[in-house]
Length: 256
Ligand SMILES: Nc1nc(=O)c2c([nH]1)NC[C@@H]1CN(c3ccc(C(=O)N[C@@H](CCC(=O)O)C(=O)O)cc3)CN21
Ligand SMILES: CC(C)C(=O)C(=O)O
Ligand SMILES: [Mg+2]
Image 1 (cartoon, rainbow, N blue to C red):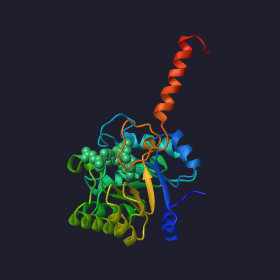
Image 2 (image 1 turned 90 degrees about the vertical axis):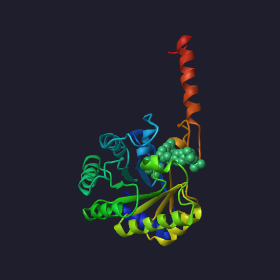
Image 3 (image 1 turned 45 degrees about the vertical axis):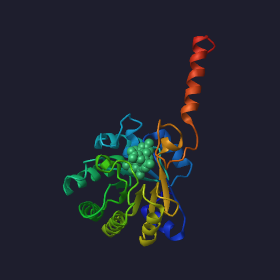
Image 4 (image 1 turned 120 degrees about the vertical axis):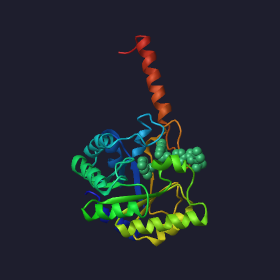
């Protein structure tokens, strides 16, 4: 039974927490889906697995290529795809074209855009009107790294009020869910109580309606991870050991 955007909104009403993770290929997507992850995000954070320092270089063609691979591995989870930097900010027409390509070419059910009101909220409203489900993303928005850095956002009264207003504007524009990244837990709680749509937190405390993390961070595959990520296993160690064992056996002619 495939999960819908309506289902996520219903789960918020029922107090059931939404489990989200990122994926960028078939193998991981298939494992996450079979393990019962509710929402799979084809995040532009895949930049890290492709060896980039920031999310800015990812192109629409690249994220579509990865999203197609992810989609083939998923039976149940809702698949959401990040619109990359400058594939939606230029004009409404550009946003419509980019989001349309994602839905048409990948089979994903929704797109995610970074930022709040007024320009992004207007874009969101038009995409939703055209039948494209949209997820919002406020707080730390990594596509603005050269303005914001990677610091926690919403720390002053003024900044937290602005993020709350952006969240409200995005809900009014029709987002089905909203990512809250790296903001104080009490602000995330306030936003989550105020909105009827589910908030998905990353570094935003326990009071969100769901949580998302970058899969390579929880698996211990990334060289460095944000302070708010939890590392559940160390795949760097596991892989290094397997490769070293193989190398020894080949060199000593023990394998095959
Ligand atoms: N592997 C990975 N995991 C992520 O969660 C992630 C990415 N990449 N790339 C896109 C964004 C960037 N993220 C990050 C990365 C680092 C910090 C971090 O270290 N923050 C420090 C401050 C660092 C600074 O000021 O330069 C902190 O204490 O808040 C926060 C968010 C979250 N997202
Ligand atoms: C961390 C999530 C929210 C994201 O945008 C990404 O992985 O790109
Ligand atoms: Mg992203």
